Image 1 (cartoon, rainbow, N blue to C red):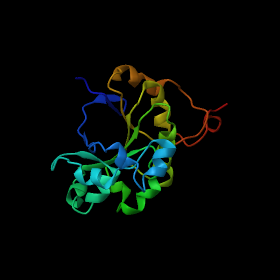
Image 2: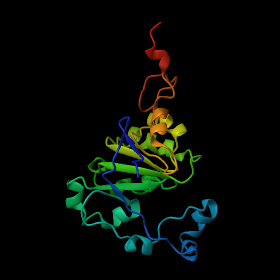
Image 3: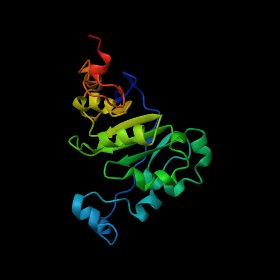
Image 4: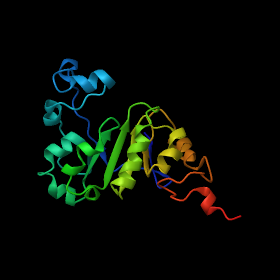
Length: 200
């Protein structure tokens, strides 16, 4: 199977293994402490059982769910130092809910943001926040329902890595990074608006 990962305007092999938690029972999701967020959005946080029962490789580069990363953070210190541990978050998770529990966000070589549906615009806000407010400098990857039409705007929001949905053509998606030549507004990738840059 060909690679679906785009980094630096190229399609590359993925060195990282994305770790998924075990599925939670529907009834467990609706228990006390989960019911409000689940009823409002259908997006529950991982349960303690899911976090404890998530299995991941003891070696190599792995991307862990935020809850799993925080649970194992102390025992993972050596692997964090070796740049083997990244984390991934869902778009409904608040950065403020975990940022203070991470020793230094820039010790993480990779942060991935998983979008369940391409129409979920929260991924753009998360990219902006991680780059502008929290000063994250390393690889910021969009995963999940990621399509060509989003790539240019994800790049503007600070993403520099994109895992294209498996049923789409990564070569075609790559072209989406150059859909526009001169964006009018300032953004993460180009802070000055076009009218300040273009010479008359």
